[in-house]
Length: 147
Image (tube, rainbow, N blue to C red; front, side):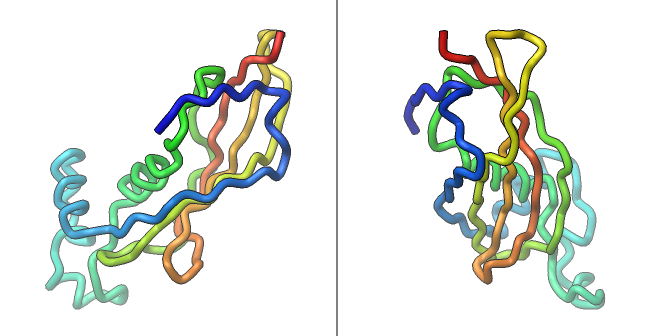
């Protein structure tokens, strides 16, 4: 992890970066359930899941989001501020043993209320080891302009 200043003018539409991967473990399921209080059987009860159409435990969507976004945090841009995330969708289930990585594409740039800033949207896709998109969202940034 390192600092890298990137100003609004330096963001290029369709510019893409790809993260390293991370394998999802049973420990991830247990720790996330403990942090959130979400002990639904879909995530925690292996035997019950075997009786369901999906056949195995499904990762918490919020865990996939947290890990997938965490993978994108390889550089710190002191010129940008996160405004949040829009249009989040859980597209496919993630299971224990799946390896996910994130692909981030600059999809929009625009004006901000403050003239010294601009807005940047990063479209984030979290992808499993089979190349399937499992989650998508848009990360909204407020970014300083060069003076």
